[in-house]
Amino acid sequence: MKVVVVGGGAIGMLQARSFAGEGYDVVIVDKSALGREASWAGGGIISPLYPWRYSEPVTALALRSQALYPDLVAALHQESGIDPEYSGHGLLMLQVEGKDQAIRWAAKNGPWLEEIKAAQLYALEPALGQGHESSLWMPSVGSVRNPRLLNALRALMHEHPAIEVIENDGLARFDERGVTLESGKRVDADRVVFCSGAWTSSLLPNQRIKIEPVKGQMIVFDAPQGFVNRVVLSDGRYVIPRRDGKVVVGSTLEYCGFDKTTNDEARQSLYGSALALYPELKRYPVIHQWAGLRPGSPNGIPSIGPISGYENVYVNAGHFRNGLVLAPASVELLSDLVAKRASKIDPKPYIPSP
Ligand SMILES: Cc1cc2nc3c(=O)[nH]c(=O)nc-3n(C[C@H](O)[C@H](O)[C@H](O)COP(=O)(O)OP(=O)(O)OC[C@H]3O[C@@H](n4cnc5c(N)ncnc54)[C@H](O)[C@@H]3O)c2cc1C
Image 1: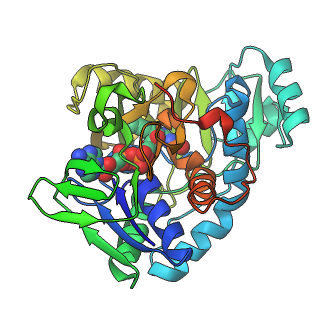
Image 2 (image 1 turned 30 degrees about the vertical axis):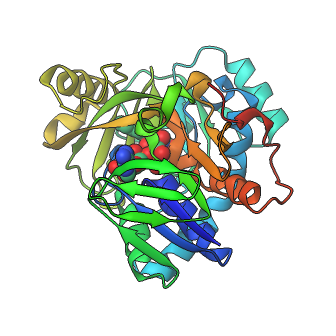
Image 3 (image 1 turned 135 degrees about the horizontal axis):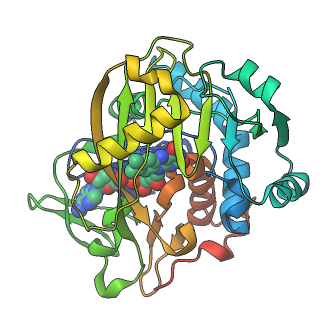
């Protein structure tokens, strides 16, 4: 069987790898270089923020993915020689409303979540600003350095004998037997799979699936190793430490179409949030600011499965704020659907619909 995957973000590249593992011939096409859009721009937290506030379908994919992540990144490291720098250093959540709900959610779903007092909090994060009396703590949550994850995947795509890569040539048209690219090149295939993130609705006729771009801006501080040690979330804003000490701060949530420009207002706002958490970050420079387009979908539930009205055309898109965490389980589910196998996760909540 030959499959063409349209879109090479984290979802598309992992999907291509999974299909190649099934023994299919795969062509992956992207309008630009692989892995340079939302999946590159994201923070890499391997958990939804405030996970108890999400619906069951998001939780089901998140829990399955979290179980798959450590082995997946180890395999990608081994296959590509590039370490995606997965760190299982936990998630601290400050000033949370509805702690009881969080604790009940964790008891039902399994992840370790507890309330810790100031002494333990400051032992974990000595540079945190003063005045916090407690925190919610999820020690098992990890994060990945997503640009490195994408570099690993891209290297693998180019090296894999069953995968053909076409970059800088976007989809112009598709039908049930393949795709035609903007250059006029034709790729025939038995299955067409859209993993085109925020662009997916614009590539399908008649608004078949509702996915809209939602801009997120981020900044990064050049801090020394050990200044921040784990992901810390407060008031919807977060800091993420990288292994070399850099501290990523996110993020804004902006509904402004396919605009990816950054601005000073967001930079100042993110800077203010970061210093409110870690006042001594003021000693370190902000070395970069960027923006990406999340594939926003109703309730953040991705569309995974066949697209109605077509034979052999599928989608795996619309992961909104959680595409990095949800990727492994979403890919596993779509591979099961394409192979017409029973899936570990009930596919019904993700059936693509307008
Ligand atoms: C600021 C920010 C912070 C985030 N933080 C996190 C986080 O901490 N944890 C988490 O889990 N998620 C996070 N996310 C969300 C996550 O990044 C996305 O949900 C995820 O990357 C979506 O992956 P994707 O592969 O569907 O989309 P993308 O990575 O955007 O890939 C889509 C691909 O489709 C290609 N494409 C588009 N049109 C065409 C065409 N016509 N022809 C061919 N190719 C095309 C694009 O070029 C692109 O490469 C964050 C996102 C942002 C913006």
